[in-house]
Image (cartoon, rainbow, N blue to C red; front, side, top):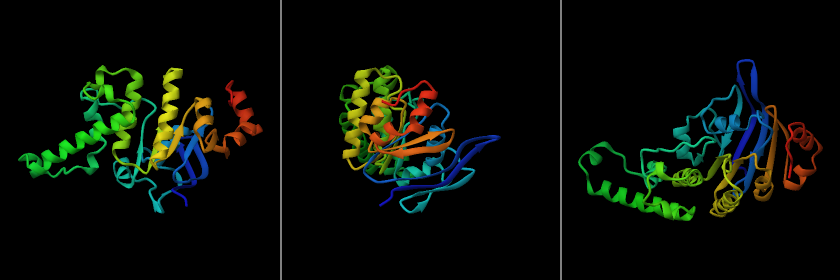
Length: 256
C-alpha cells in the first residue's frame, strides 16, 4: 500500500529549477528520510507536498487523492502535518496553548456557541487542554506544561513544535531538520522521539543534515541532488552508493 505518491514533480522559480521531474512513493508506517547537499531541493519538496508552494508540473497523490496545489490549511484535515526548518512558535502564548492550536480542527469553533460561552464550548476547551498536556508528556515536555513559550529553551521549542503537529492527529508527519541546532544529547532524544512517533502508526518523512541520525532512524532514504533524485534505498544501500558518496564528498560532507 502507498500512502504518498509523487509523479513527475517539478518546481521552477524563474530560470531556476529547484525540483525536477521527481518520482517516488512513501509507504505507511515507516520512517523515510530525504537527504542531499545544500540546495538539493529538500525544503522546496516539503513545501510542495504541504501546499506552501504549487508545483510547475506533476502530481502529488495522498491516500489516492490528488492533493496537488491544495492549500496547507486544508491538507491538515486530510492528515498531513509538518514542522519547519525555522521555528514557527506563537511566543505570545503558553506552551500548552501552542499545542492546543494544533487541535483546532477537532474543536467546536462555531461562532454563536463561542460568543455566548455555551457549556459545550467550555467542555471542549477543557478536553483540548487536557489532550495538549498529554501530548506534551508524550514528547517529554511535562516540565514545561505551565510555561510560557517565550521562556523555553531552544531545544524544548523544537519538541513543542512537534507536539503541536501531533495534536492535529496526522497520518503523515513531515519534519524539516528537527535536529538543527541541537547538541548531541538532544539529537539522540530526537532520534528516540521519531521512533516513538512511528510506533504510534504515524508515517514520518524527515529532512535532515545529520547523517548519523538519518542512518540510524530511517527505513528508507531518498537522496536529492540539484533538484533531481540521485538514489534511494535503505541505509546500507545509500552508504555504498558511489553517486551518493561522490555528491557528499564533493560538498565536503560525509555519509556516515
